[in-house]
Length: 153
Image (tube, rainbow, N blue to C red; front, top):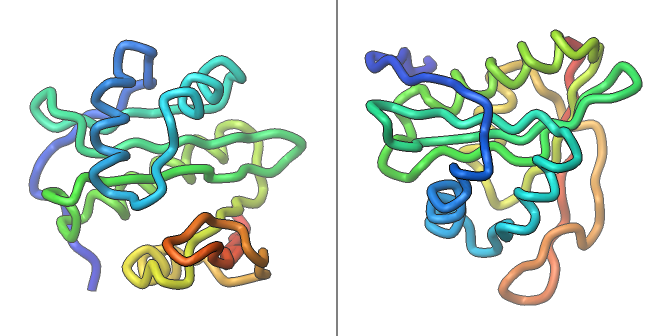
C-alpha cells in the first residue's frame, strides 16, 4: 500500500537561490552527495530541476534530463523527516509527468542495490530493472554497482 499525501506541497522550478537548501538536504540524506557544482551545472545545462516545498520548507527535489524521446532521472531526494509519507511517490509521479511533457516515451534511472526503500518505490511506480552498471557509485569501501531501472511512459 502506498502512502497518500495529507499535506499539500508545492512544486516549482529550482533556481540558483534554492541551492543552499538543496545542498543541505542532499548532504543530510546521502553518504556521497552531489555538490553545489553538480546542481549548478544541471541548471545551466537546462535540465528539469524542480523543488518540492511544504509551507516554504524544501522537503525534496528532482533533476531530470530529457532528450531524443527519453528521459533520465538523475536525482530524486526527500528529506529524512518527510520520508515514508508519500512524498517520494508524489515527486516521482511529477518527474514522470515532466518527462512525458518533454516528449519522453521512456524514463531511466540508476539506484544503489543497497537503497532498498528507493528500489521498492520505483517498483511500486512501474519501474523494472533492465541492467547493471558496475562500480558506478562511490562507496565507503571503494565502489558500488548501480541497478538500472526503466519504464515505458
